[in-house]
Amino acid sequence: MLLTWASQTAFGKRALPCLALLAFMVAASGSSLAQSNLARVPGGSGAWLAPTPALTGDNPLALADPQGTAVLIFLPGSSTEGRPDICRPLDSRLGTTPQAFQRLAGRTLAGKTLAVFGFCSETKLGSFRKDRYAGEPKVIGRKNDLRTLVEALRAAGLPAEQLFLAGHSAGGWAALLLQRDRPFEINAVLAFAPAFTGPRATRTESWSRLRREMITRLSEAERLQALVVAVQGDPYNRPQDLAFLAQIPGVRLIGLSSDELEGRPCEAGSPHQLIYRDCFSDTQVDRIAAYLEQSLQGSDQRGPQNR
Image 1 (spheres, rainbow, N blue to C red):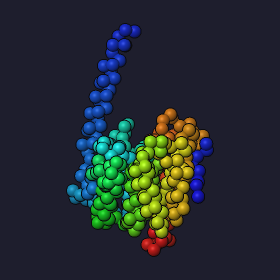
Image 2 (image 1 turned 90 degrees about the horizontal axis):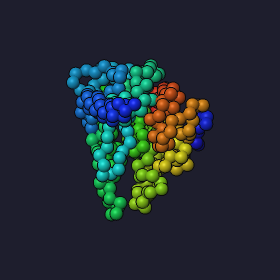
Image 3 (image 1 turned 135 degrees about the vertical axis):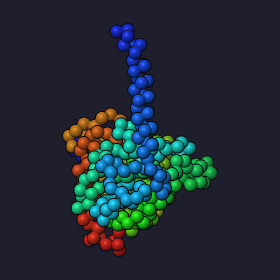
Image 4 (image 1 turned 45 degrees about the vertical axis):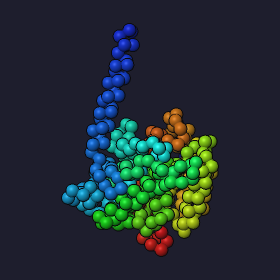
């Protein structure tokens, strides 16, 4: 079932380029400084968003209170197969972790403190070649990297029912694939505008074929505990393009407008990037928190056999 989450002087001329260059250099240096704080973790690198959870020892995944902590891993989208991905989880202005999730960090949900980890997967390039229909697509490598991180967190003592995956675009698709493969390792997935095969208008037959195969694999799941947010007019996947997910038990598919959310006009931009706009973070944080809290409260009732 498709749900809806929205109502629908001469000196100045000479100085301006220099000021613009200076601003760019300051921003770039600040971003580099922020990224130097990333920690190596199994599957790639990343960082805890502030307020950061208390850790023990030198292990960046060793939570001091794993029983009292819920963890959400956020995986951003991908560039094309041959272009390295960029991941800046700590950059507040040009970062790859949406403001919505930065605002969620530190919240108390169902008695647990939510910790948000911005993850940069080890896989930066893909080897899928559309002319030969061969090679592993980047989304599979990123899914495997995510699996490695999940396994490390579980080994560090984090209960499965307190672990969530969230992702945008290919990050969201990778998270759904991982839950399909390892349903008992995580509580739920939040997938925002999930996609991995490029825009519909320019999608080749090879990519379309790969997409169909992955849809079949996802559809074979007995259950996927997931919240999927699609955006009207998204050039990658519109709500109707993801309708197959709504047929899988446990999946909630929600359609959003990219023009207005709860009476608040949205800034101009691609519908695919709605999660990074202020209108989204200003109106949807509480709803995301409610889904996480409900999932934490409902994990005991679902039980392993229903997950």
